Image (tube, rainbow, N blue to C red):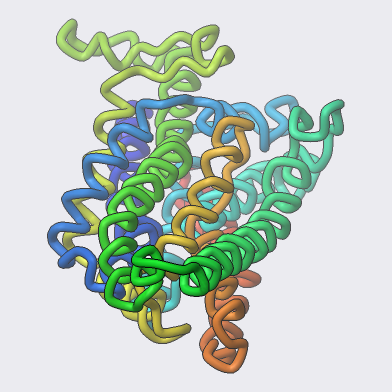
Length: 375
């Protein structure tokens, strides 16, 4: 069983690496598309800001570890988590291969739920569906923590980006109509120069937001695996130099995640971005709508705000969904006809299919593991 625990840690980091193909690439797509930063400069910015964001909090990690499965119905084991991660990873690779920005977050959650139902022999009560609370964001279960934010957060990102860009346009028009030398600040050259610099801040904010949410999901999986293994005595024979792998279940209940888990997740995700994120960046930054620095600033500011608020509430939202919605919002604010809605339709289908597709792969893998005696 120790081998499976180590496999969970390894696969979680592989998943985080592949997450770099998807979600971190999404977080820097706009700043690359507007030519404010070169791809490698954007990766460097993402690496630093992801790391800061990953160390910022642990509310999302706690949700992944404690808020989605009913442990009185299904025992969370290392083989279950291996299947969950494999389901998410397979779907991520499929969508990456065709350049679709699907959600790594929802792939992971789908894989976790599919593996849990399979391990519970088809008992859907293994999933915590809905445990409402007041206020609503303190509720637990798939509906409150995943489904509701999955629908509402990109809509809020769309509306927020639309309003931010509309406000910026209104300010520019007002300045252009003013008397005196101030009016020249509304000229396209001055506007582009200003937002060329401002987008550095919004891109950094976006990287921070992404790290504060996505990096925590892998943290939650690793912590869950280690706590389960420790409670079952599978870590008792480790050498002293591996004492750091003995987490406390009480600490996890309070959302405390070991520093080595945080650092490894953030660094591996940045490496994934550098290695293979450009397929997704092309779809996000070029195919949906042509972006200028002012558009990138509006989209990043709106999406990063939504993600940061969600992270503070422990909601595992999708960076992909939010930045996609925000880019659609700025495109609509500029000219609805400028948005390539055929590309948008493909992206939305990827969103819809991610949870069941990753869950289906994980479910099948659990069945295979049972046949060969691994589960």
